[in-house]
Image 1: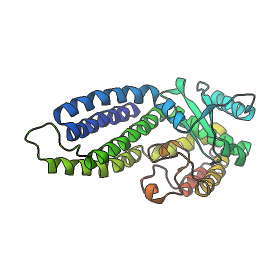
Image 2: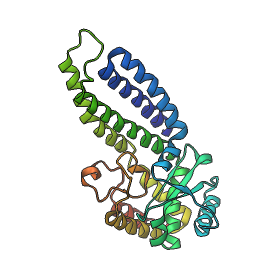
Image 3: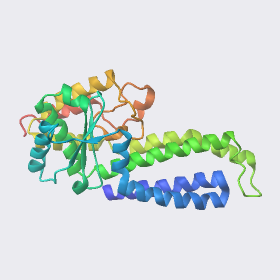
Image 4: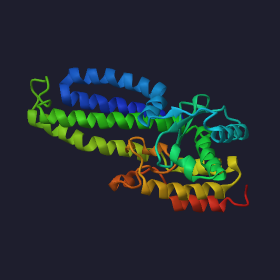
Length: 286
């Protein structure tokens, strides 16, 4: 199923780029956009994890500096039977974490400095178990590609907005109506950000429930993960993450935009209380 989602996301990106290319530059623009989309597809598949890590200025976490973090991840790797992922630190006080990579052999687990300060070892094990659950369930490729594509769509929206302002709607087709072209550009500028958010919505909320359940089994303590989620939600509301945007919000264990306007309407994260209730129901079954 995740391979099919990946195919749909990459195909959708190609079609969207071609449509905008036609609006901006007619047939020639559409061909140029197609070539650009092919490049974007390649970059999305092979380098989406590196792009996301760069956005959040994540750095490799040395074992000598973060021994507890390495010990927990190593233990979870043994319990889950997964290859040991690379471990990164995000330099921000906002408590959060995510996993990325194109497959379990190239997985990355990233934690913020803030999460290490507010969680005890059991809670941190629950959070890292959740992220290893995403790796086990092979959610990470789809999530990483979606982040790259959503960012590209936002770039398209900005291109269309500037083109509408400076006459980019006058394309090379002789019979084209400039007012139709201008209207198409304006529609693109308005709808493209919405499309980016809908891509997030396409990443099913069920994957968070699945990662919670898998992570609780890995750490052996559903209540530890439930307690961590409660702390992380309060932390995200009190201190929203800098550099976070709608295109990458779905990667994190809790929504990093919790304190920001209406973007939560498009959140791929289920309500924290629902997630906690499901974890509480697991007590006694593990």
